[in-house]
Image 1 (cartoon, rainbow, N blue to C red):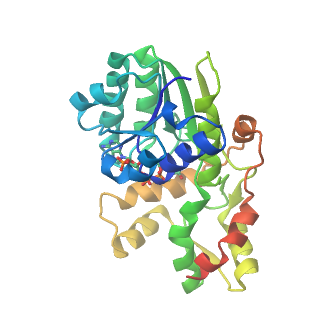
Image 2: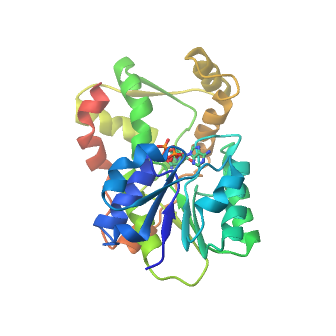
Amino acid sequence: MAKILITGASGKLGSLVIRHLVDSQGLSPADIIAGSRNPQDLEALKTQGIETRKVDFSDEAGLSTAFSGVERLLIISTDAIGQRLAQHVSAVHAAKAAGVKRVFYTSMPKADASAIQFAPEHLGTEEAIKASGLAYTIFRNGWYMENLLMSLPKALASGQWFSASGEGGVSYIARNDIASAIAAGLARPVSDNVTYTLTGSRAFSKREIAALVTKTTGKPLTVVDISDEALIAGMEAAGFPAAVAPVFASIDKAIRQDDLAMVTDDAEQLTGKPRVSFEAFITASKDALLG
Ligand SMILES: NC(=O)c1ccc[n+]([C@@H]2O[C@H](COP(=O)([O-])OP(=O)(O)OC[C@H]3O[C@@H](n4cnc5c(N)ncnc54)[C@H](OP(=O)(O)O)[C@@H]3O)[C@@H](O)[C@H]2O)c1
């Protein structure tokens, strides 16, 4: 089996992908390399027989050593919004120079047309991968169901969920289902260049989500429609830096335009297993929602 390196291995998605490579795909730990800026945090993987390496996209010189002998490379997009296009491009160049056979990348839905302000970082990375001449698999990852646990508990506590997303929907998917699909894509033989969009099985609007949350928790939650400008002002008042608030507010604009509503079966096609339903996620999250 080819050596597969997963970057961002200490992150939430990276660690789940590695777990699925071993548990769901049956790969030998000897075929997996876990890369992280902090390989010392990967001791648990090392004890399973998984090699660990230092991988920091901001250190292009170090990447040639990191990627040596790797056939399949999963580049997990970083969380450094504003800097990550340069980071990802460095990783692609280093992959090419190191003789990597196929690059896999975690992008976002409609990277080429989304109103989300960081979409060009993902599009630029996709373009750099295509321009490199390397074989590629792109996973355009839908929005994690788990993202909702960052905003919903606070909204539920106040009973009001401020929104500029109108009636637009999001086809949320569990992070674990994305990881499972990526692991399946990494493990299977493939010769073509391919782009998957990994989504849930249907899109839910904020009003539909609020009704589901109210039914599940017994606490009323009302969606309060506001403008993009009011959303940005509210985020700044809540402590978001002035440079960051418009970026996050652009997600509501994108939802309003149904940029995140696309539904595909790609995840189930890859894994052969059903995804966690949105309703099941909300039910399982009852305690977390109530805070
Ligand atoms: N679809 C969605 O809803 C959604 C939501 C949030 C984020 N995302 C994107 O998906 C990615 C994975 O999500 P997650 O849930 O696993 O987030 P996370 O736990 O916050 O992981 C962030 C990842 O970025 C990596 N990273 C940061 N700086 C890096 C650098 N200089 N070089 C190499 N890697 C670097 C980290 O790796 P190490 O610390 O191990 O080096 C870590 O794996 C995020 O980074 C973000 O791009 C998607």
